[in-house]
Length: 109
Length: 114
Image 1 (cartoon, one colour):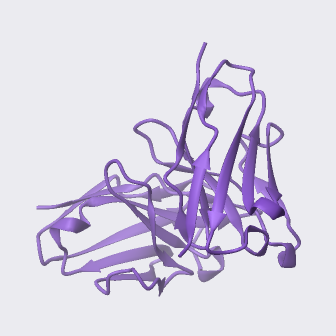
Image 2 (cartoon, chains in turn red, brown):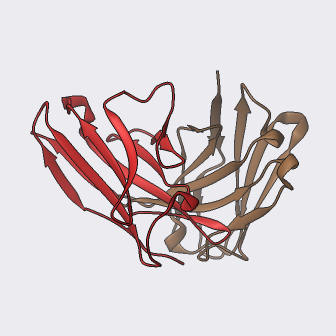
């Protein structure tokens, strides 16, 4: 089973831009790994943000975008808002199943 | 509107069994890929297992830690997904979420302890 790595924590200033990344122990993350991103705020269930590398849902704020960057999946937040402070998880395909990254705690400060 | 409501969590002794339910509305469970995800207290998300839609063969896959102990099934008439958990160990403790049509339930807490 692949080990999926994310930055444990990141800080961004209000209005600033930050990129979260998602790497795999098995090699480069590609679109074939169908990377997805989820947001979880304290005490709440997670919420789906991005699927299939860079596809957003109707409820995903426009300031979030997904991509592939240097062999990793990436989630970029442009114009951070206080309400974006949360844990973010990526999910990638691995064989017949899927694996979550360890999560990134994003602080807006 | 898609809605998922999990139930069936509780306290169980190591070696015991528990069956979780996920009642769905707003879509048909048999036509969707349905996933179970868990979260141990204070920890990150862990992918547990998934059943594909009938049109995609209904294949079931599990993460290594639960393979052989957990099973997934559906009850089409009640539009409900199940997670049967047997031979439970303390490491299975956590909140279990049902995910379908990109929506998440609120979760149900499973505690495995003697």
